[in-house]
Each structure stands twice: as C-alpha cells, then as structure tokens.
Image (cartoon, rainbow, N blue to C red):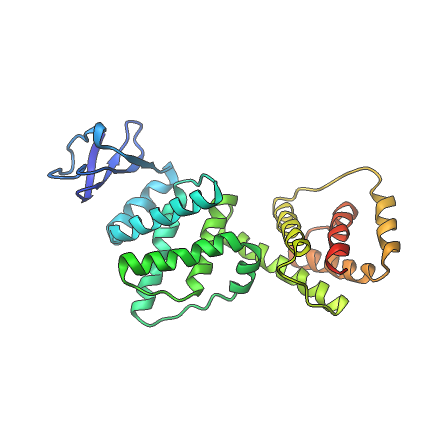
Length: 275
C-alpha cells in the first residue's frame, strides 16, 4: 500500500491494493514518509477502509478537518462498540468526525443549535445518549473544548444511525413517531407514564420497531388477529378511541396503514403501561 498523505507520525491516508481509500494507524507508521512511499505492513495496527461512494467524502474531510477530530471520533466509536457490543461500519467515522468539527466551529463562534429532540433521544436511546455524555467529557479532556449537552443527543443519533443503517431524517421520524404516540396515550388516559418502568421500556422498544416497519413498508401478519382484536377492545373500552387516533396519526403523517395485526400488538403493550 502506498502513502497518499501523512496525517501525523502515527496515522497516514493510503490506497489499498483494490484501490479503496483508507486510514492506516500504527506507532511511527508515518515517520519520515511522503506521498508515494510504500507502507510497512508490520507497523499497521488499524486499517479503516471506506466504500467507493465514501472515498471523495473521506479525502475532503481529511483536507478540511484537524486529524485530532478524527481520532476523537474513532475513540467514541470504539467506546460505543465496547458498551453496546455492536460492530459499526467505518461510515460512522466520517459523519461523526464531520459533526464534531462542525460542533466545535459553532462553539468557537458562540452559535448554539438546540437539540429539539433531546428529551426523546434520552428516552428512546438511553445507552447511546450515555455514550454521548461520555463523548463530551472525552472531547473536553482531549481537545479542551466544552460542548453543550445538546451535542450528546446529536452524537447519540449518529450512533443509532450507524446501528440501523438509516438516514438521519429517518431517525428523526422515528423519534417523532414514538414521541407523538406516547403523547396520544397520555392524553387519552390522563396519565403520566413512568419512564423508568419496565412496561414503558417495552412499549418504547415496540414503537421503535413499529417505526422501522413503517419506513421499510413491512407488514405484520398472524392468524386469529380478528378474535384477539375484539378480545382486547372488550378488555378495556378506553382502548378504542386511543388506537383510532394512533391509526389516523400514522396514516396522515406517514401514509402507512396501521393494520389490525399491528394494532393488536400495540394494544397488548398499551394495556400494560396504563395499568
């Protein structure tokens, strides 16, 4: 592999044998190297390879962004993978490095970008949010820059995105769907749901998977749904108007028909959180 650019003594941009852009890391791997030199494979400790469509984005990012931001993003991803036991693609390194760079630039110019979905992120993705909080401390320690708590929510969304392999817009839609349905439930039953309860956690998990099905146009089918549907409605007459409003909301907002089968699953969880 040949050196494309020396980022520092321990990190270089390179081209793999199959012509993909990559970042190679290793102690002294970039020492006294220049573009065109051959890398010592024995010194490569980590190699991040990017897909074809990410190559141009990656090179532009390296040109415009301090390498320290990439290193911080790398540590955040490694922390996330340790905590969540989930392997993430290198794509998240690009988006996260870019976001950190933008957040720091805004902070230097005293520009704030309130995270309007921060509350929902905390509720729906608590593990990712905690990693976001860890990230702010790490950024402060390594870069001596203090970012607002809102940024923990934005970092969490990047991590969620990396796991689900969906766009940031879809993550926002998932958050909005879950938040709106919870509001509908609380309004209809005149209650404040216990966000720390196991039943609430299970309901949120169900809503996140429902959102994924809505956005991928997947449908759920099982036998005897009609009988189960009638049984659940009889179990608590308050369910019907609440479910009907949820059905209307999902159709108007996302153009998705909330099937009777889906309604059955929803009502099973609903009965548990309202009691």
